[in-house]
Length: 118
Image (cartoon, rainbow, N blue to C red; front, side):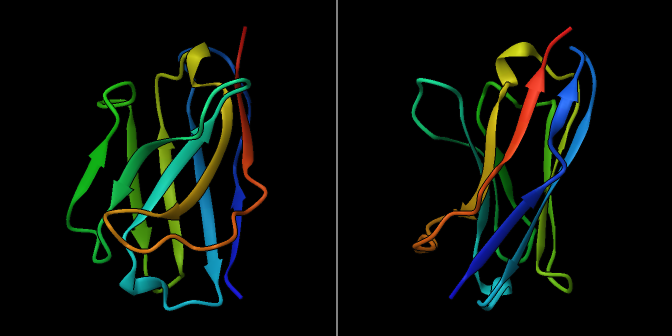
C-alpha cells in the first residue's frame, strides 16, 4: 500500500516562500515520474509541477513558472516543491502523486495547506 505524506505548508505573506516535501513509501519511488498538485476551494485539482523519474526533466503550469521549482531525492523517496514569490492565488491544499505518464497511485495523501495572505 502506497503512502504519501505531504508536509511543509503554512501561512505566509505575499512574496514569501515555502518548501513542501512529500515522502513516499510502499512503492519503488525511483521508477515514477512525480508531480505536485493543488486544489483550491471550489476548484478542481490541478497539476502545478512535474518531474521525471530520474529528475532530469521538469514542467510547470504557466501560473507558477519561474516561481516554483520541483526536485526529488530518490535515495530519500521524497519529492520537493520550492515555492517563491507566493501570491494569494497560490492558496490551496497541495498534494503529490505520479505524473509524466506514470500510472497514478490509487490513494492520495492528506495534503498540506498553503495559505498566502497578509
